[in-house]
Length: 202
Image (cartoon, rainbow, N blue to C red; front, side):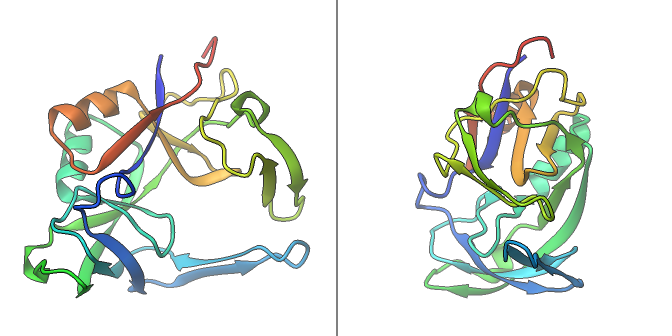
């Protein structure tokens, strides 16, 4: 079984517009850790975005404001048709545009996706070492700081086609080869799949 880290591909395909700011339509989730100082602020559900740059709207919309997965209705329909999940979706509107000729009325219906599938990332198996770990909130640092290729603990994957490590990497989305094949065959634009380190006995 092959697994992949799935993201937008905006850093490598400059033609696509990107969401640069978020305008909440739902309550905000805000927290800060008194022990390590880590903090986060993001909408609990639906929101609107301001886009910037680019020549076209992609199916996978990069979000520079916060690492949320935003995909078009085309992707959602495809995933639902093929039984990809589980996930929860929230509408995302395009409210404003900066430094682009794209028209707001041409924007596809977007959705923010929260993945429910679960697995556990093996930090040492991914080539990293913990240098700091907050026991209160779970915030951590590794050496190297950015892990380039992920590995999972054996038998930690719950069998979902899309999944994540909800504790260590809640904003990193993983998927099976089925999702990759669907994206390629249905030509979902601006998607990127990085193959993960093989996991034995899963």
